[in-house]
Length: 301
Ligand code: ADP
Image (cartoon, rainbow, N blue to C red):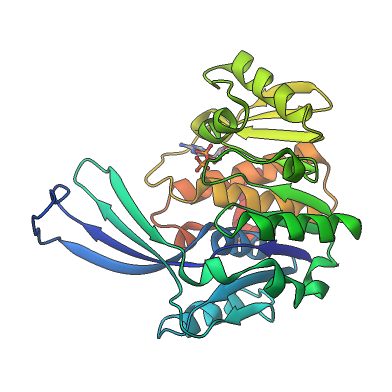
């Protein structure tokens, strides 16, 4: 049985400028790139490159770039049969400005991602007959709920990366087997600030209380807080020279479920995922930075 990712596809338009334009101002940037993005897409790519048979449930619009995006997923070995092309809308878009200080602003338009409704999902019921389902929060919440319910009913492990940060209904959390917030997302979900190990333990405890068996709070360069059945510990990551942390979390999530798909024990899967994420931060970009299984295994040796 496959690993299924249901989630977003975005086209990222990235422009580099000395500083952000002020309201009403026009500034000429230095460099402009169109790159594939979206948390669902990044995580599906990470899972496939990490070696898992991956199916991706998503929507694109009827624009010129959509075809090349989907062809890119197929080239990574992803099963794209549940990616729908929706008439009359654009593919999801992120307009990203990066200034000389390395800060960014991001304006998102959900586009086709908003069309991944529970009704449309129901047309891809076979995709939810999976061993594991990986979800994020860039598609409608009702769809995530329906996907989690259907997959869980068929015995799948439901993994939720609760990003971007938002509060979530208990109904969804109760269906989740493994959750992977970063510090900000953990605080948004629980109200507990994750500034240190004690904060991580308290936030993990609050998530266990919602019915979630495994809580992994990602802590950037500090690694992760791994908590299972109320027993938590910090697991350090790999020490690398970071150049661009975009998609570190997405790489971690895709590689984690890929390792679990291969029935690796949880601690080993976390180590594999941290190795993948560490490699991704040494390279620029989102999907461009996602490593392949052989590279991950090489770092683990
Ligand atoms: P997000 O990108 O969602 O905010 P994090 O920043 O917590 O997620 O990063 C996810 C994982 O990526 C971390 O748990 C860690 O394993 C790895 N990682 C992130 N930043 C670094 C870094 N500077 N050096 C090594 N590993 C990193």
